[in-house]
Length: 475
Image (tube, rainbow, N blue to C red; front, side, top):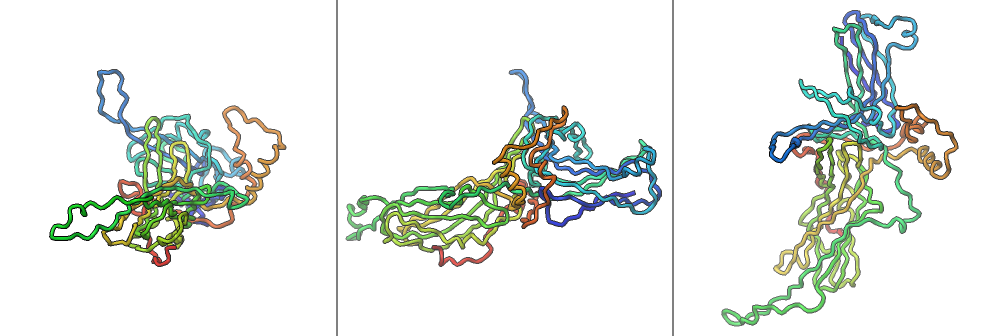
């Protein structure tokens, strides 16, 4: 006897409000008795960290370490697809005999908005197997009720968020093991509603800013004689205000970047004082940095990784002239980076019970004061960093936005019903999701990060500029 779960995959990944459909296919070489065929839609967030054991008493020393396992069932839905209600009412519950051959049983689930791990965690769901070793995660009361997080890997043995459909074929005999099969799928959540501003002026910009001051080195006077004039070896101190500039990296406010889309970034250099030399753009590197916080009971750690969006050097292009007035802003040409989308291994930011992810964007602007290659040239690199939010790019359906707008503008007209003890009511979003259709719009590509390598991001964590750029149009 063999069993397998076959999923219908209309998209590369699933999102909130989607229907997860498929079939459980049984292949029987002979007649077989079974009790039930149960299908479960599950999502779990699992972490495992090691740390020193607790030492009691001042004279006790214990250098051994212990491992803590924490498991949260973010999604847990159960459906019995065999026997059907008609068969169950007309037959005994001891078992049902299926003829030899292939049997197919369809199933259908709908993915909600929020996680429900506080109601789904139990001693059974906390049970885990690592090879031939059984592990039991301690129960925890620390739960976060938020939107379901995306599928996440890249931290082998430490952290993982996975979604799957699992089928269990129960057999009547105690000595016969039950058959199980599962099928994993990728999940990418719907993004939150984006703020709507009346005008671009109200929206403003988020920015990272750096002030810098160059040293104006005058030319040394011509020496006379074989050893030169001793007084001429000490150049006079430059008078007046030294050359000053301000470098900005700006994003629309709030600072939101979208998966699989180019960065809406602007980089500006502002002239803050008069100076007699030109400034050249030498290099530019743009990097998205991820910080993943992992917690397993009393242990926690933060893993960092990065994706290089752009890395260019030897540009050697002037950005303005020395005759420009003080206060002039030189804007770098966005064609350097606006045709490069974020890699498809970037997950949107999220927070769940034991794992969270946040991002920062760093732009390293390399400038040279003076002509590059001359002794008086002053090359400098200016790092600009700012926190950003990464959205999935899957917009919420208009029906959901209108429902949320109505709920915020008017008090609820229904009478709340109180659930029985131990049975928490569904959230407002999940209650409304029952009536809403799946998302009908563009979806972004999402691929799991390569788990190879100690960094956890593998070879997919970096992306360099592969398309040619016209560096003569920097402004």
